Image 1 (tube, rainbow, N blue to C red):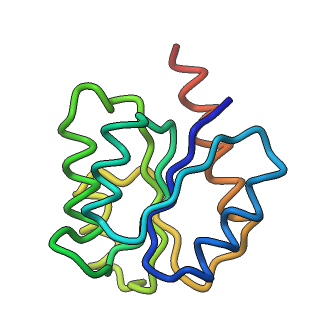
Image 2 (spheres, rainbow, N blue to C red):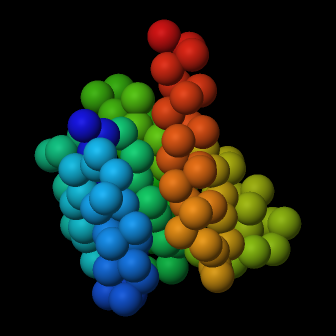
Length: 127
C-alpha cells in the first residue's frame, strides 16, 4: 500500500484529496501546515507528499520540500506541489526546491491521481 501525505492548510481541499484517494490503495495522512507536515513525513516516510506552498507556520511548502529531499531516509519520497502560484518563476522555485511535479490550483483530482501514478511508474522502472 502506498503512503500519501497531504500537507494543505485548507480543510476542504484536504478533504477533497482524501476522498479522491480513499478508493485507491493508499494509506492517507494529513497535515494542516508545513511544520506538522515535515514531522509527519519523517515519522511515516510517505511515498508521495501532496504539498501546498503557502501555509501558516514557520515552514512553507518549499521549505518542507527541501527538507524532504535533503533527508536520506526520505530519498524515495516524491513531492507534488499543489499551489495557486502558477507563474513560471514560481514553478522554477518549486522545481529548484526538489518538487517532482508542480500542479496549479484549480487542479482536477484526476490530474493529481495521474501524477501520483506517473511518478510511481517512473520509480518502479528505475528499480
